[in-house]
Length: 296
Image (cartoon, rainbow, N blue to C red; front, top):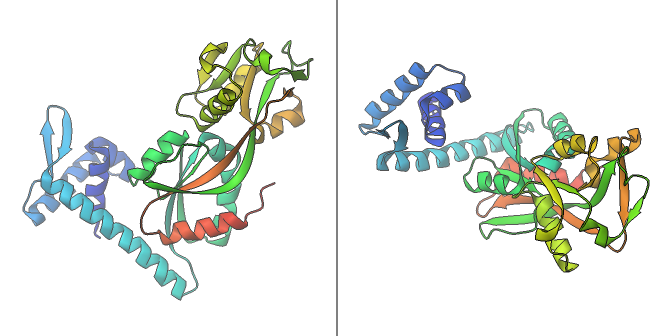
């Protein structure tokens, strides 16, 4: 692939010349120039404008599909050549849900990079639903998610167990109680993750099994990250339900207090997600590495 092909892919995926320029660290006129050269070479229009929006033409869609396949074939070739020289070379785009990307995967990626320094890594984060969307749109090669639902176009593998626990700020009126009942969950003000979050999905499913109506909970606010929730708890007389792995530091510093909820355990499994179809070699290498990794 030459550079014009890379520029075309960037524009096709952003459908915006300015964003493609920012992504590639070149000027917008340079992007326009490369696209015009490629259109001239192929003797066809690849994009069309409708108002302020840019769309792929039929030819553009065909070229995009072909170039994406070629790009992946080149990445696989790069990897196989590296194996011949016992120097693994390639690239890998990893997506991770918020909890995993903040509290688990950075140490894994650092160790993987130390073992395979010539594999270029990119990490994207968001909630589990967003990561699966990116996976299906071929924007990432694998995803690490915490939701329990499954998509038929994705294959999943378990990689780590987790527990969602009730926590409150040390200054909260609930910190002195140490233990609460399930019925308290329905009355105490709550702060929870946003819709689309794997954490929220697991909470809803577990409470439903306990015949607790989620819609009747006293939810004060939904926040888009666990860090935001932890900060919110510092000045909030209520509780949050978040991953136990996300509060290890706060428990040591005694800035947050974990509460025991009688007769309620919210267990979940973190999963690795891949698109159905041929395996990407660098992704397979990472999966093998992850399966052997010792989490603290």
